[in-house]
Length: 395
Ligand SMILES: [Zn+2]
Image 1 (tube, rainbow, N blue to C red):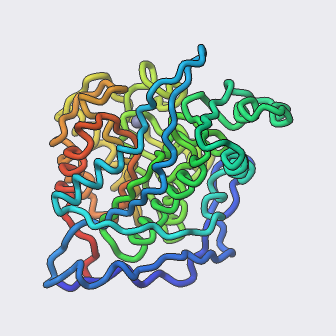
Image 2 (image 1 turned 60 degrees about the horizontal axis):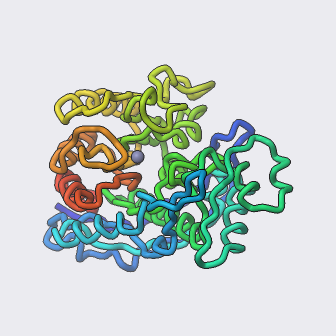
Image 3 (image 1 turned 180 degrees about the vertical axis):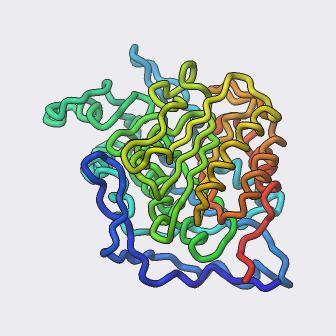
């Protein structure tokens, strides 16, 4: 068995640029963007003797400064479940098990982010965070559809225009953390483009709730869709979202596209967040009709029934025959998750991974949710153990 490192970036790559008026992303074919990737930390050591070793785990500590509290209407602050400990627990467990090898993210052109999100939205987050003090936590006052609120002096009022809820507060470090999470995902996408079979992007904050120009659900930028959009320059891409919650942002950003299939298994929106999306009859719009598949789940579903639904999702992915697969990987389907009510055990995540890997498509696994801190590490270990373990493609 020969090994091929992820060093050969396909030439002639054209980055996707420019959301259209409907808010979704369209690939542009003319503007080359330098990837900025460095393969220096990936070498032949990863395939010594032809053996396939640990999965590359793209990770960074930059997110740690983003440690918000949740604010209720009476002004009380409560612990936010989306804590800096989450990716650290995953990383420590995977490294302790010898299943992952850390890879530092590389800086990517901001146009890859602006191709998916409204640039004014990104700039609002950047500029607002820069104005906050080191201890400040800015919670949007609510949700507004009126652009006139952008003229208000209070940044919490202005933030209402770029939010769809109050659970994605801004701190001084938030923009840098969210920007880094996108680079983590894009670095993972670079690995997949270069021939890696499985790459794990340890993104924080998560991203699948982030809309074209609104933050919410702990999400600011849609890491999975930015990565999928990059990968779509090489051919069709499927996003398989197995987070407990429906990825409203991911669905909407790909809703009119026929080159990105979005498939989601999630708790039924009739009882679970976000509530306004994720129904089975949401199938896409325009050219995207038939390229969006929602598979809502009842509460407390356990692994055997879950696998039957996952089969349906994987069959849709196989029929689409993508060149790459982005897995929006949430561990909040765990039965002990404090904000969810599904019934999976830690070891069950291995079965998910085996089924997904059975598709045979190169995969980028992007961390989304998962809040049971005592179960995150073992769930991630089970998941990666379910992968074939390849870091490099067969030559
Ligand atoms: Zn979730």
